[in-house]
Amino acid sequence: MLRAAILDDEIRGSKLLAHKLDVFENELQVVGVFNDATLAVDAIAKLDLDVLFLDVEMPGMNGFQVLGRLGTFNFEVIFTTAYDSYTLEALRLSAVDYLMKPVDEDELKTAINRLKKRVFEKAYSKVIIPEKKPKNKLALPTAEGIYLIDKVNIVRVEAMSNYSVFILADAKKIVVSKTLKEYEPVLDDAQFMRVNRSVIVNLDYVVKYRKGDGGTLELSDGAEIEVSVQKKEMLMQKLF
Image (cartoon, rainbow, N blue to C red; front, top):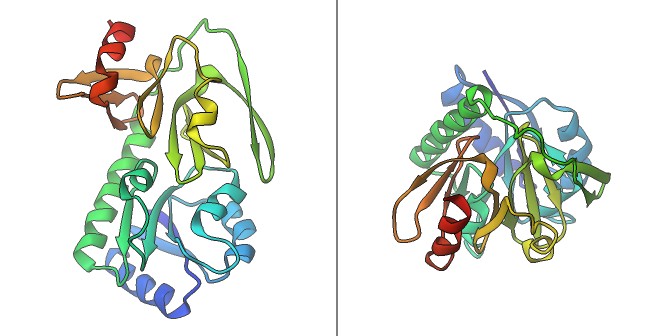
């Protein structure tokens, strides 16, 4: 059964969402409901979650800052918000979905199905970590400390507002309060490439290229990344 938590500064909103999630009681269990973002960070870090339903606009700390404070996490994120002023494409790069309040029940069902698919792929996809690569370390500063990771273990890096989300081969996610542009010069190795405005991909994890205007990359963790038309020729040279 999937384990979920809700973080929303509006008590009424969090209760309403929890009630709507009762429909999925055979598939999903709400193990925590939080209404104070600052106090919730430590509690969320201790929960073994599959998904966090996360409000964007909250007093004291917004949803992006919550993820930044967590530093690293293995759960998926479904954003819930009353505002449509955020770039949906950027959010959906790392989030399962982006639901507008009041949450529509059909849209919630679609999000849960998408969540189940992603969790299944994470659990059962065979991520092959490339061998015989130099252990080139990269330091990632977060609110809770500095993570030292091997570049070879980076599957992709995604833009999320003014943050960068590092997705690793073991499915961990590390949120860093720096933009993707700042990491592009650091990830200049032959296997890395910025394939669109919002994603840098480790080409060693590409399992399939699907044709199109720019095309789409399928990665070993099940992610599908669109390639911009401008990057297609360079990608073909690197891949083939």
